[in-house]
Image 1 (cartoon, protein in one colour):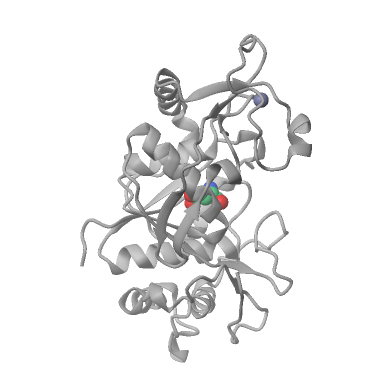
Image 2 (cartoon, rainbow, N blue to C red; image 1 turned 180 degrees about the vertical axis):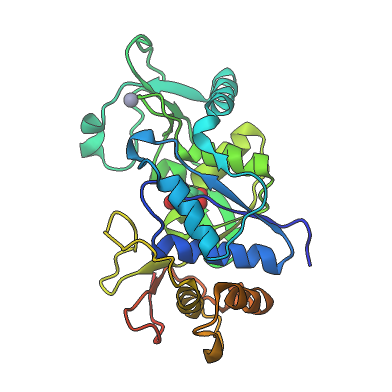
Length: 304
Ligand code: GLU
Ligand code: ZN
């Protein structure tokens, strides 16, 4: 037992919960509970144009139905804008930010790395502008519990990146770092699709004087053609009417080998078993995806 463990689940309320996010939620819940730690819930509703009304409540209800009870109050990012703005002000005072007028269209031909057009230019601040943070060429090195040693160079990956968009919305990268620090998160456990955000987040932690938590990027569930199960790919919403068998199937994909007699058990029974038998290390190392086949049994994964 390790009383200090604190994890979190941070869904974006762009639609109802689908299997991909339930898979991540379940892994995070089991990791926290099996270590006698806490598990918090944060609704990432900053990008208001992409949020669906009612989706946040639907996500909370689905988690409850599956018995995935969280600790403390739910954190809503949309209520925390002043806190993010204070961090922006600090970064600005420290000379780490600069305004950028470049439109998405203008940047398209240059690819994913911002070429630094607006770095060191004096810019008309009365026009709408994004704020970017400077990055440097030194590699960011971190250890991921499942994905292993990571070496990322922000100058090659993305260049100076946006911390506040031109429409005034704070970037996910900024908000997540502040919120995880404030919650005292000791380990960020999430889908491997966010592995490539981690170096940006560590850069921000360093600039803001915040501790870096441990990281664990678990495989994401994909369909047979290798597409991530997500709202964008039209994955079906999780059906909460019969949660036990769904938990059972997800535990199989998490490689926890649940005994067959649990297949039809109620969710509380399945979860109790899972907390007692959970070993995250049964997930394959350095693997980015796990297939969610229609036929629940054979587990297959694809190389990263
Ligand atoms: N809100 C993000 C998502 O739904 C997750 C952020 C995180 O876990 O850091 O993909
Ligand atoms: Zn620019």
